[in-house]
Amino acid sequence: MSADFIDWPSIAADGFPFPRTVPMTQLADELSAMLLSPDPAIRDDYAYTATARWIREGHLDDVLEALGDTATSRFTHPEIQARTFAPLILCAVLTRGHTVPGLVPKQAAERWYAAFSAWYPGEQDTRGWDDSLGWLHAVAHGADAAAAFAGALPDRCTELLALCARRMTSTQSDYRYTQLEDARLARALLRILQAPGLNHEQATGWLTAVAQALDGGGPGPVPVWAFNTFATLQSLHLHLTRGLVDEDIPAHAEAVAARAAALLRLPYYWLA
Image (tube, rainbow, N blue to C red; front, side, top):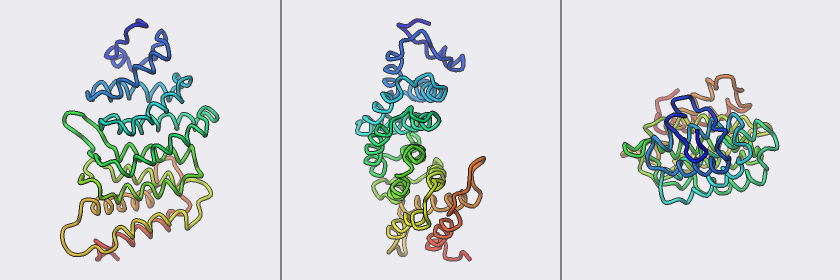
């Protein structure tokens, strides 16, 4: 394996062993460039798979903050795949930082959060899958990042709940959730609600914005954004009542589930 050329198909075929002969900065630069690719094999199968694994295994600790900064800079990139893979990298970086305290400075996480929170609720291209570009998944990838931010910045949890509420009620996209985006949002909301110290008002208050968005709906076809909202509320109710494998049920799960069920009676008036 040469320091001048990385044979990605061979690395993938071998299960992604870390290429120790390649200078770290060169490797980080190449991975970052590949994460921009419109070719899903290069971007997803090679670059993202390798980056996420090597971050998790600690091989990229020396360039972790640089990877986070590069990812964050892509929230304003003109190409959709660049924007939607940025939160996946942030998720990996933040999760590694949570595993190894002190590895990711809080000021870096705050810097990334500012850029993420400006992008997530307003992204208009929310397609889950594109036949040419492959997985895009702005809603799902952003949800994963939101949950990771909750672990890195627990004092931002009420803001993160509100951010997810804005995403799920956004009228700026005409894409109907078809790739389990509602479930990914629900899982993220559950993990944010696990934050210690959230009181009843903080845990349930974000649903007031959802109720306000739905207020005034009447006869006629359900708008796409409302369908997405109802789908997410259903998924959230299921996640709150069943929980996640090997994870704690949030302290206010019953209260949040009750609020979600009350909102679901708007379209499903026959619910007991």
